[in-house]
Image (cartoon, rainbow, N blue to C red; front, side, top):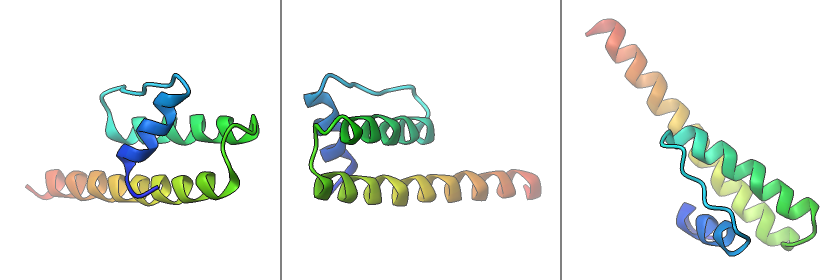
Length: 76
């Protein structure tokens, strides 16, 4: 797993197309779906771990962006 796109392709392989329209919500739902695939033993541990790490990093990035925007609105 090298990108969020790779994770989306993996989820699509198992019939999960995720698009809510809110990037953060999309990423969090992808994490939930990924965990379900792993718990169902449909994906390998290594694949799960690398995808989860990518998702969590991206979720943190999105949260930081939202926080910066919110602070900018308060001061602007």
